[in-house]
Image (cartoon, rainbow, N blue to C red; front, side, top):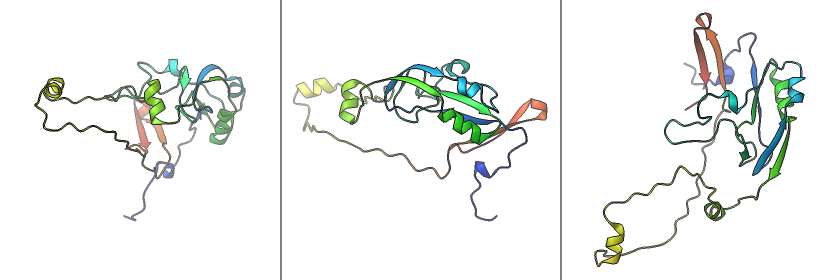
Length: 187
């Protein structure tokens, strides 16, 4: 035991490994009009292309509550959003450079810069609204059943924790391809 953390990137990479290059949104809020993948397809080391139609099922990350799409399909909501494409390359550096140069035509949508604007436009996380009620609240308000009624507004500035390593996964087949071995920086 050395006391040193071991990260996915510390794992030796098997021979013939393919590296996933992600094509990310370069606009904060926009409709995707078209994507030109020809540069990727003509680049050395290109081995294929994954799009939303290649994801069987719902194209979402959702163990319980419907989450974000794995691949953005029509609208992006932030710079660097969910990959628009995943391109496997034999060389990770070429893949990153090419993915960054994929041409995406956008139609920009209005920026939403505050929580109030998000609520007003219905742009906040649609599947997270929860209303907890016990008893008949309206009846209580109409009668003398409420000892006190307190109203106001609460704002909580949420924050995301800081990752010690970038999200990455290393997967390779074992047992003649019947199983896979996976090392991942998940929680």
